[in-house]
Length: 276
Image (cartoon, rainbow, N blue to C red; front, side, top):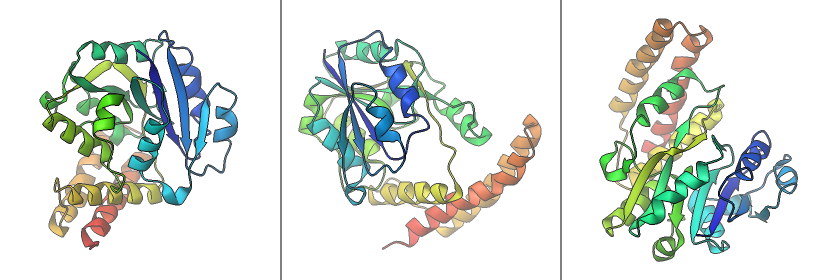
């Protein structure tokens, strides 16, 4: 099967070279790579062009995750399209081969791989990821998480039937997975298709990420954050995180970071709750 790998990017010069090196070292060779960049001002595009990558540029004001992904799909030639974050580094040379093995099942519409934390990942995200993805290969229906397109492969014919919602600010992949499963297709989680991927967000990025997530989930009717729930998460969550740092004997900088992180997360949720 032919494969197109779509990478959405904006100011990813720190990792894009490592990501592309890992892609071009794969045992599965029948693929093309498309970079969909939404206004990088660093060396992302310059680095990408040192590899045999097709680079497309979209305007920053055009960007939503759904729009950028659909843009890439519409320009792809592969029967299978892989969506990969620009800071998600394949963990082995068999990452793509393992991903593709799932499509022997004709009803497999998509497969989601496993994310491992980067070495510099904060202890709270590291803890969450280890709990979330500590499951064997299974259908997403049987997992305790939704489909995500940070590290995933999708049958293009299914996307042609159901493209991503370009109006959602976030969770467009969760939304897509739900629609696809409702049509009777199968979506798998395969921990053998592993990448290193985690976020070390600034405070502003944390607020924006949790704002977009909370608002999108509210629009989809999946989850709503009212003030009591937000206050409880800040107070109880901060206490839990600070205790975790002490119990695991992490550097005390994480003890003081913990409540600031929770505060930023919940400011984002509060803003989403207040939006009309």
